[in-house]
Length: 278
Image (cartoon, rainbow, N blue to C red; front, side, top):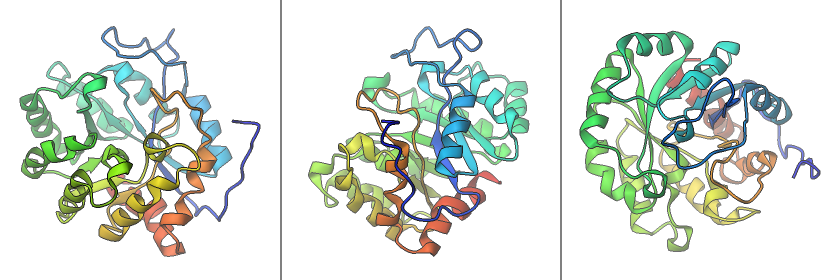
């Protein structure tokens, strides 16, 4: 894919943020979790920084991935390498200490993430989710949820009871074949009526193949529903995805669902700055 070397279709605003990306390893320094469902190739902080230079992105939110489990050291190490540009989202459990939470807060972590996708380990203990929310709420953190299709509807009652901002990853990973009138997507739009709920206009490459046009109606509808609570991210390096992706191609989708400069300023700069405290 690097041979294609696409260029940006429109000017990327200063301080644009990749609000969903990962670092993996290096495994000899930050081993992968024994309970992981997949083993990725190392993609350390230096590789991520090079990608963002190519895309012209000035900020990033580095999200802890399940292959590292609740060992957040690789993510925190990346945050510390450039604290002005980076924020983070951690994975925690009951064994995570208060000292670790404070350490992550100082490093730039601003949220926790739970995965509810069955193929990646299934839904966590909902009591654990509630306990974790109670622990990080005093820090001003938010909850990030990875859901898939019907999981949006299944988890809607929990989302509504959490007394904190909730960010839903990858447009809810809904089935594009069902269209914007599909029940899961309608529920996602309904959830966005709550001012606490945010959504990432990312994951187009998980919904359809290049050129990803099937994802555009969903991104457009979400931006219209909550223009001040949408985020965008690359999902680099696309864990569990077998088809190579050029992140510049994903960035070039943005003008198709955020057509005005004001739309792109909110999506790429203002909204992540407000949520993550840049």
